[in-house]
Amino acid sequence: MSDLTNVSQFIATIEQQNPGKSVYEIANLLRGYTKPSYTTKMWTIATGFEQAFIAGTLNQDLTLAGEVTDFGHLIASLSDQINQPGLRWSDFTRWTADHTAWAGDIGSAIWFYRTAPEKFKNLGDALDRFASNSDYAADVAAFVMGAIVNSNAQVPLSTLMLQYDTKPLSEQIRLFIIYRFAGVIEGNQLKNPAKLEAEIRSCVFAYLELSPDSGVLKSLNKIFTQKLKIEFAEKEKTIGADILQGSLHFLTFLIQKAGLDPVRFKPYQLPQAPWLGTVQYEVTTLQT
Image 1: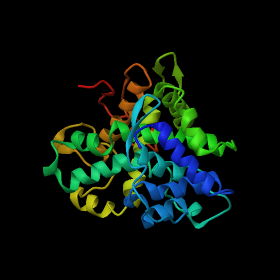
Image 2 (image 1 turned 180 degrees about the vertical axis):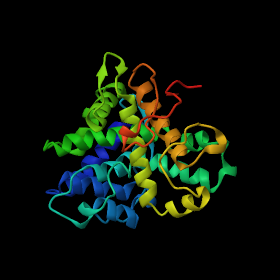
Image 3 (image 1 turned 90 degrees about the vertical axis):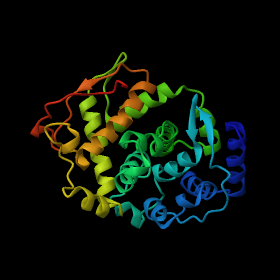
Image 4 (image 1 turned 90 degrees about the horizontal axis):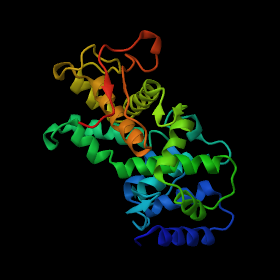
């Protein structure tokens, strides 16, 4: 199975074999065709749906909206984006669809780097490996598709995948920026990059705070805080600085793939408290 048409046909077969199942249920059934790590207890808690691993049919990279996309990751993220029918225990957790998508990608990269730094050149190398462009493309697709389903659109997933593919990734990312982050785009300029970066950083911090990784990170860094140091010097890096680097990694992907102009700005000291002001240095989405 190597292209979107074949994948869509496979999903259509699953839909036909499960008449009457909601899109939420189908998306979670499809998790069983990704990989074992997407069918663990954590995913049961996050999605409110228990699904055993069946086969790795959908665990592949394919081109979607013109971009190589980790399709297994897309399915897993989508299963947590779609609102479940009724009220379940998972509705009361702080675990959100961001954490099983881009925030989890960034947070996992930080954890892997901090626990085994000898395996990477630097944190940027870890981010490139565990929060890759194909992962981010999957995260964006999951959000946009999930938003369509949650708007009460009665569209089968097999059809929705093909519809998503008709627009370039740049358009899909602009929708993502606007509807997930209340981004303000004028022409090719993002007018509120500091707000977006703060929201990304806040979500990644929440992921690390809630995950089993948090204990290790606390012991490694002594101070587990998202507040940034005044200077962005290597000797003063804490988790706050690591998360900033991770948020800029994702923001750079969004800016570049959306066809927007690079931005330069001063990030907030504390993302959830912008009134505390910004740091003294500037950051940018220009690649160096």
